[in-house]
Length: 124
Image: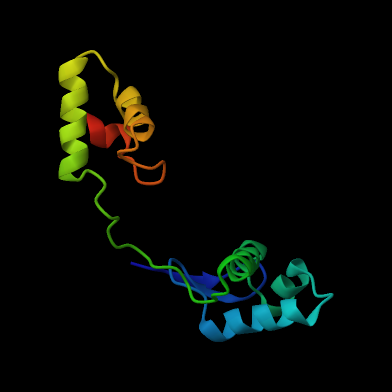
C-alpha cells in the first residue's frame, strides 16, 4: 500500500508513484529557460532534487518526460539455445563455475553483456 505525505520542501507526494505529468513538463520548461539550476527548480516546485535530476537526465538521454514502467517482467534470457550451451559447457567441464559459464557465453557470442543470464540463473 502506498503512503502519501509531505516532503522536506513542503510538496506533496505519493510514495512509489510517479510525479504528475504537468509537474514534469514544468521541470523541463524551467530547465530549458536557461539559468535555472536543478536545485532552484527543486525549491520552486517543491520536488526533491533527486527527482528533478532524474527527470532532466531522462529527458536529455531519451527526449521523454513520461515515467518509466513500474514492475512487469524482464525478457527471458535463458532461451533453449542458452540452456543447451550451458549444459554443453558443464558436460565438457563439470567443475566450471557459473561466473565462468557466464563469461564463456559472452566470449562465444551466444549472449551479449546486456542479455547474459545471471550467475544465480545459471546455477538454477
